[in-house]
Length: 334
Ligand code: ATP
Ligand code: LTN
Image 1 (cartoon, rainbow, N blue to C red):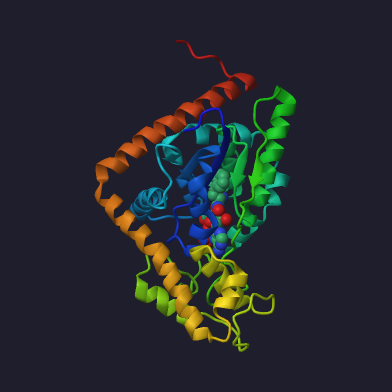
Image 2 (image 1 turned 120 degrees about the horizontal axis):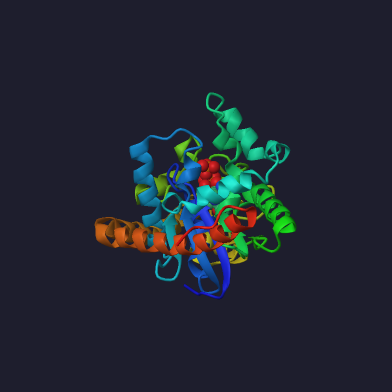
């Protein structure tokens, strides 16, 4: 890891199967960031239990997600990939930060309102203080930047508010983080409803390409993708379905929308959908092969989990000890 460089933190929940949106919008971009930042990527399993989970399933998904991080090309020698639950500092700092966060602030969080409506039978305190745990994740590593999607910007804003409030009382303890806006910023939309983002919790599996979908399924989903009756491959506001397919094609091939328009000039949607499907297969097939191979290498994954967990705990403890001292907890006797 690049000690001394600026610090970057991000995390993903191991709930649901990852989609092409998660890959093109997040994972793929995480790969090269280690050249510039000291990167921490967590599997945020503490966050996952804010909605009820099947224990065996959660354990399996968490391991699969960590394996996927590596399969996507995030090198565990150069980045810190770990389970949030293996570093107790997250929960400890979250408790302290809870005491510096106001009910009124949390009441304004739109994700809480959405999730509370969705899980009306289980509106637990963890769901309410979810953003505080997220603040703890970020502040624990003194992160300078946090790559997140638009939906998480409100949580980053509250993280900054909490950090500034704490610093105003105790001096410069926390780095105040900035959102990291990637270059491409591809937002991938549902294949069935191009007004809605592709999401792993979508009930309609035809709207999403899952990272583990086989080639036939991928091609079939693209053939069925909702488009329009214009019958021209053009990158235009009025053609959200085709625009989304062009975005996907460009992200997978490295071509520009203009090049794509030229390539498919005078050709029908059938041809284009087939080409998009094939470009996605070409990206996902090697990823799936690496994932399969890694899955068989249990010892290697275990070693990554252990070593990276210890590395994360080392950095986390540095901040935590400082914070504990600032708020007035008794010193440890050595
Ligand atoms: P859920 O359906 O459970 O809310 P999600 O698929 O929307 O999940 P998140 O876990 O919220 O995904 O996000 C993980 C990361 O993937 C975030 O960095 C987010 O910005 C990115 N991401 C998610 N969906 C897309 C998308 N459709 N296009 C681009 N990036 C995305
Ligand atoms: N809430 C985020 C996941 C997440 C996260 C974080 C992202 C938890 N802790 C810290 C960035 C930094 C989500 O649902 N996408």
